[in-house]
Image (cartoon, rainbow, N blue to C red; front, side, top):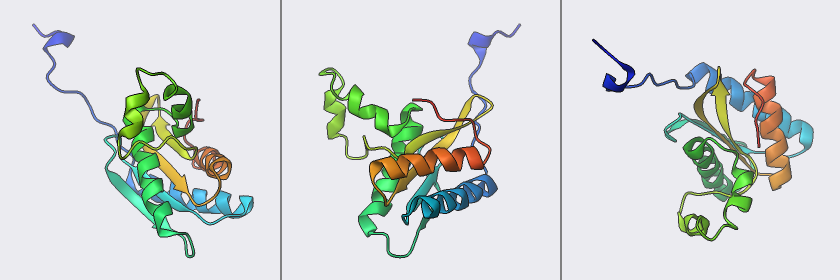
Length: 148
């Protein structure tokens, strides 16, 4: 007789390469409409890089920031801009010292059918521009609207 407590594994959902590529294209379209060029990273739900593109002229530091935003968003399944409020709590503040934690707008978990399937990170504009491009691209690519 089997029960849920006997399970030794869980199904793992992950963004497909085609969906990651489409999301990157949607980000570049949104960023162009907003008026900036971007570095865009998409990770799987474990924070491992799935796809990445840095537009011409985008500073190389933006590449690392985009990857870390995607990693942060996938890690806790929460948008990166919400970390500023979290880090004001003295019990959480030590996480600010983690080298990959990126508490800047522009990172969102990617969800499909209620499951986190990856992380999206955008860098190259202001934090507001990065955040706006992420929200527009997720919607354009058919992913669930971001919360937070």
